[in-house]
Image 1: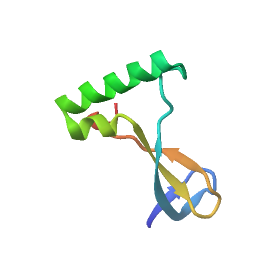
Image 2: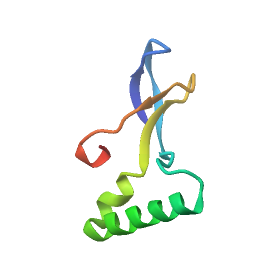
Image 3: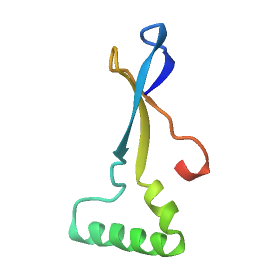
Length: 78
């Protein structure tokens, strides 16, 4: 765990890192789910590593108060 300044607590506290899946930009119908599959399949063929990073968000969570901060940094998270 990292000791980072927490904006909510106002002091340096221990933080842990969590990774969550981003919500799908596609709908719930079979047609929309098929579009999501094709988008993921062809995106993964071009860059297997980059495709998976497009689907996740990285957060730092304060172990004291539970405040989450989105920490997607760099081109791989955009």
